[in-house]
Image (tube, rainbow, N blue to C red):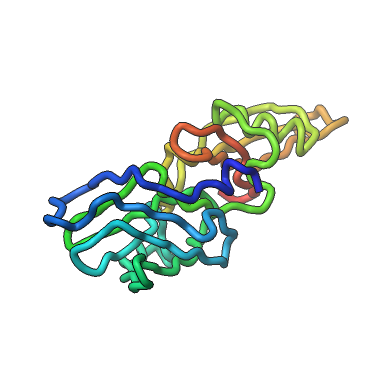
Length: 208
């Protein structure tokens, strides 16, 4: 696992996303994920400190629970000086903000992110632009010649943040095949390693 992913552990720059923070509700919220990177069908433990004023609840933002329903806020439990909860991975690979709710107030941070990745995600090439990812995949993974690369909108039930996820439909000619009838196509999803981070390959699929 890349060091820059393994050290996404201590988060303290919390911001209030909505509502008015109750008096004495927090001093300096700190949230960490154990582990911060998981695969599909795995889970992570959310550890929260520095909050007061009631039982906090946690959610993974921008995710859709099958069949198309957003998961509910999950109450956390007290464990010594911290609050904890277990979050299961959503149905899709990607990067998901973690948010905390105390009463009607929602607290979040741009660095409170759960990465649901395959083992080799972002361990190979990364790029400044998402459009570079599908071109790299065609040339270096498929060993083919690019013919067309077009943006493809995320589906209506896919709530993943487009600032962190971009999908493309690509056409390419396999090595040694130049005829139009030999062309192949697939869908490439690029992911950003956090807001302001670099882009890398999230997944390739023959289905949108």
